[in-house]
Image (cartoon, rainbow, N blue to C red; front, side, top):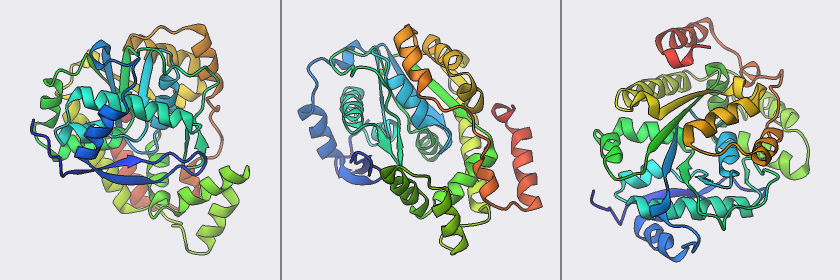
Length: 318
């Protein structure tokens, strides 16, 4: 695949508790960074498995990605968008080094993003060669494949070591509601401010809705976007061998994280060591009673549309 050096790619900027923004960089600069930021303890040739999330925004990818990243034999990049880099023509060794660099930088900044810290109480693993690396940018992995015929086939044939795919699914109503609220960035800014001040964002979000600064009703556009992602997932699954993808139900996972982590570790070929299981499980909040869907109003037609999605796409079945 030809590398498009003038192509610009959006990457995250980590700034501790304020982390939320991205910056655009040309591919040639990222290619240079993949060489200059080289970690002597990391060798792309020794990676045994590449794990790519796929699915929907606000499905728990950040949390589950951070939990896997905390394993001593794994590196999962945050917001890097590895499939977008592949689409632009970057080779796997360079993508792998950027994943390693991204993982180390995210950890050094406390694993903060959009007002949450995904830090795990474990020693840093940056001096250990990972067996598994991957990327958690699941919705864009689906979008790029839908937009670019042949992209997935090319990726599978590009020498990526033992690709595995993690499909994280949660209740569509909560996905769609959060996707609606996040448009424009104010919702995230309010959550970050609450995180910086050590408080709750619920009151400020409710006030912003009362002031007309945040939506109070679900967006039809976000329901359509969710459907397009479902269709993209189905198209990808037709090309991915069944034993190479794992469906993770987010609500089930958060209710019993140790069992969920063991399942993911077995799928990726990671040792489910007791220290990792204990620390990672402790970082998972139990399911709360508050659901994002309740912060917005739903029309009968919108409720019907979501019900049809659950019937049409088997991976949404609960």
